[in-house]
Image (cartoon, rainbow, N blue to C red; front, side, top):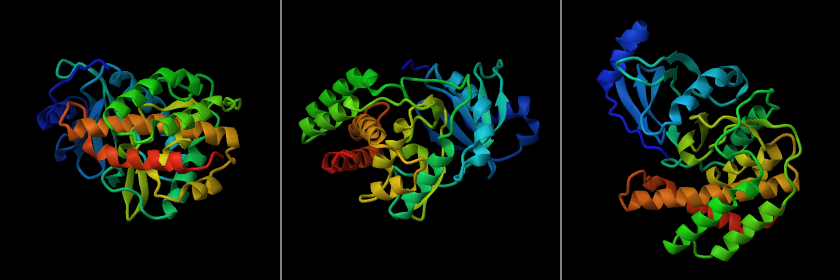
Length: 304
């Protein structure tokens, strides 16, 4: 990741609004969150501004959201941050930025889903999203393609997590991965994917899901990449209910690939969580618990 960290303040956000969206300049501005690529600032009660601050790739991700997400959002059964305006680079801020709708809720890494109905909500959301993507739809950041292409990243993540004592049974984790890589590849049309379904990007209220955010990795590809999110987001015992509600039915090969993507995501989140516990830059201590729960579930589950 190319770190291009910038100093973003409420005054900067107000200045940008005065320059390009003066109708919003008088709304209260307050920090919402800092992510890998962007900072999120609330504007009044209904809107938010996202500004790239820490990676060079963030500019393209914001423009991609602005291009594609407005057409997808109306068919999705959970609220998502719908782009309203794309701010252009200026002397005040040399990068693009975006105004979206604000999605209320608490990130699932801070308030995990606890109700069985969460499986229905996630299945309904992914059923609606996973439609064939049009020609020219984005591909991106090594997600949604053949799982075998991620083997080096998996091997490195497993070695790091094992060295830190985060994985009690690395052989069992490796077995899940090898089975997933051996599964037949996706032969259907590329479908729309969120691409980054981890607990910080899914919102909860009253024990179930109430929104999905951060579509910077929106792309077309193998649905197994998104189905992996069920292992990390849902409470124990909810996977079967999730697949019962997901349409079209995911075949055994797709479910096996989803387990591989889930292992890869869980290892990444476990390492980020550990970095947070140790106070290292970029670490997020709340990411560890759902990652470890996912690894436990994946190891314990029978192969589909």
